[in-house]
Image 1 (tube, rainbow, N blue to C red):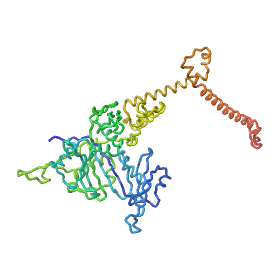
Image 2 (image 1 turned 120 degrees about the vertical axis):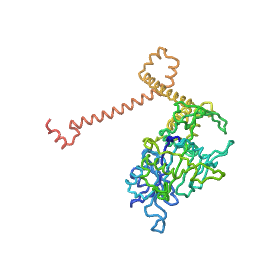
Image 3 (image 1 turned 90 degrees about the vertical axis):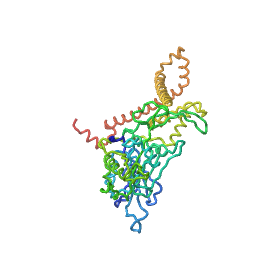
Image 4 (image 1 turned 135 degrees about the vertical axis):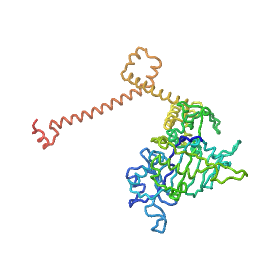
Length: 501
């Protein structure tokens, strides 16, 4: 039997929410603002809490979310104790190296009484399972009935109908109310269709799961019929990235699949592994990446229990416990799975930003019908260049980048020539040449266009220098009058002048 080698994978928490009790202090948004936090307050609360706000980290990114001040208190016949609150780490925070430690330090620092986990999701991203099977193949065979699964009989699948058959991109086991549910889905598709999160892709790249490649493609606007080249980021096979853009047909795109377990508070102490061990769910179980991987593997033994659909001689299906098991993961080389890394602070542009960038590129060209002055077109190109660089240089073609860089260099050269011209004008080196009529037509034209502006500028400089010198002269005169004794107070003068020198 061929030994299973662990495939490259990236394990992270994807949701963490805890239930806490505040101390007697009123820890509302203003409380944290007074302590120096940047706080984003939602104008309305939730069905259970009156207040909801998000604390931002030093980079202005969400750190954690707090829901507090419950409507229904036990002292009034309700369900919550006084001071009850829910605290949820922001999704970006969960992709840092030590999210559990950050949460624990926050709870201790601000005197929250930790009660337990309300919900925790743990996810593993991979291209293939450790046994080499593609997750897409697993779902396809499962939906066709050639693979069976134990436990969680309630399923919910999503996909699309194609000419060559059905294609599945997501499958979930467990009802919405289930304390423990399992989901396998195409994470790259979700990021593309929902909210693109560069920090997740950055984790994939650092884990060696894939690379990010800039590609260029042909785009035609359905409303205007305008055809143009556009660029974007795609996820490609690791080791195939190039610094220069490629056409979209040249790259080998890959799908990153996610296996995700979602555990609610009701499941904390009832999951049984191998009919012997009860799996308790607490913060310390997920404290490090290695522990997260171990917990994921333990959960996979319980929740990803697949077997081949097999039959007896009479063609009757065998019981599942007698069928050949399909082992998706191995526990080998746990210690070599993770390395600490810092989450990128860059963000993918929003849909609105992408629209603005594409419009600015059009406006920067003189053949698009906008009829804008050249300086305005240049400003459009400068702005889109800045926006593109701030998002990782994936959303502007290399040709447009080159055009923007050439424009930037031209502006810098023009500014340098302007400084040289100002020095030449101020020193009056050109006057003799003007008299002798030895200046070129371009030089004479430049002087005629700019001499009033230069004279006004140098006059302004001289006036400012005069005012500054006048103030210094007044200050120096006052110093002379004081130290010579003219303006010194008599008692001070007596003390100073009697001092030995």
